[in-house]
Image (cartoon, helix red, strand yellow):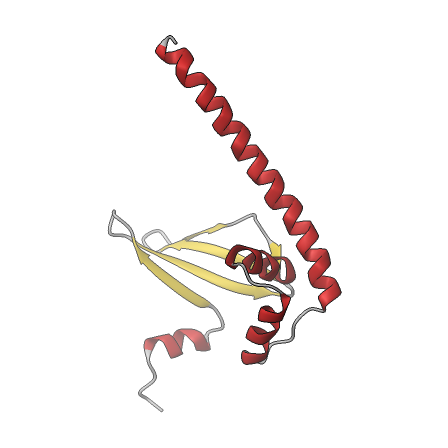
Length: 130
């Protein structure tokens, strides 16, 4: 019992910590906490121990749907993963509604990025005097 690993001890506290070394050699701890049906991400700087909360909050269904779209899988594969994790999953109808909502956000973001890139590309010849 006394031979628990560091990961097991941290998992017992209810929050996952992810560490990454930055070029400044300071460790940044990311803490993921599940609150009701929302997942919130906090970044804690170990030196000054201040929390910076991310204002982007996704409901779990939208986050799973976005992950499915990003990785190129569908509802059936999400069901398989959820079954393997013994995790309840949304219905197919709910997935389709979330898919439509997420697809609109992806489309709008892609359009905004393309507009910015087009404006930047149009500005380059002007700067070169062409």
